[in-house]
Length: 551
Image (cartoon, rainbow, N blue to C red):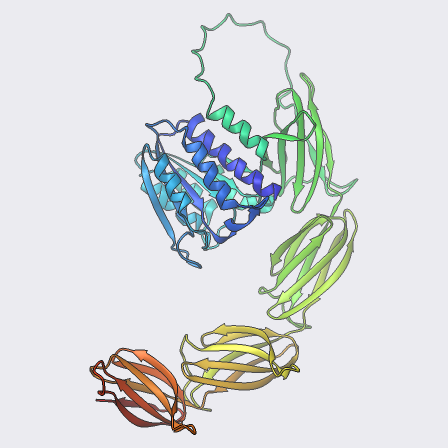
């Protein structure tokens, strides 16, 4: 929760720096409206905190600043095209942006690369100075390359800058989007806290206008040479190990009065050599999921070279569907380490705190968990076999007949053995032809539906299997036309004891096509005038198309 709160604070800090400290001529704020924004901080959804923070900052924007507002993922689930410039850059837009944010839904994916590109084009970045502020709590999920985009916009723009706020991302995740800012000369900020948020608002929104610089004073006498850098930390995975110079991250904060983290000063990656003002700091060294924190004092004229020890090791997991199979790129690998957890996909490598590690590998419906003891400085490489077989399911109108190549086909895989109440345990489901399933060894039933056809098809899977399961529907296609009808209904030809036939389906309009099981039926044409209904008996043969017109 605290990490998410810090991310919002960082977002406001960056917004304040961009719109006030740097006085950009034109700015578009891009807000991540993906479904993950429903996560809560102290009982309040992130999206609510973002809305309130935007409203607070925008109240202090100068009237002549041209601020625009863009969002993605706010209209459609699962769409990579859901990007919208809601408020074009214009003076006095604060109220419109607040209103748009307050009414926004949060439900979609994260096409952040495409959104930044569209915002740059809306700002005419090849003609004018332009700034984009991206606030995201996730990484690109639509195949874009934010690093490459940053280079492209910097090379083709007149004076283009992208500032990026990451919501509580890991060091590795942060690097995947930090390059977007760095490649344009912008800033990447992740994680602060609520106190830092308040201080940022005071320092940026309420900061007084600086007084004119005084006339230059006479040149002072030369001072003794100072060291080039006064802070050069190093970090090792374990005591006695070699320093890490690539892939690690540094977070530097001013120390608060009680010794805890105060305002964030910087986030850097790899080997660090820098200059800090004299004072007390809290420094966090991170490598993947491992971290070490120290309190550091910087004194004038002295060089600080602290050593950080992560007390961590590295796990490398090679997931396999079955014994002897290739490494699976479809596997989900969950690491539960002392103090936290992380998820990887496919072949997984993670630096984690030393201690007992719980590794869970999932491929389709198969899951296996192993416990590994990891010592500081140790690398453990392990093959994990889930023990599943692979099945590809297709439906055919009749055995040996035409394949039902229809996206409306539904497959639900249930266990063949019934429970005491007669029901079966559902395992997996999918839609469309060539539906793929990874299943543990067992006997199963494929519940297959297409329009009015529903069949149960048993099959079995063994570990290492790779098979195609062909489900015969024993059905045909019924194409119905009823000129002038307001609806068409299909009934079973059999009548119950009361002389009534069971309705199998109804569609409004004067034409309808359905896949139906082989057998006898009655097609009824419903007209708007009472007493004008017409019916026609029809026989459907498996694997054949039957066309009828009811007039």
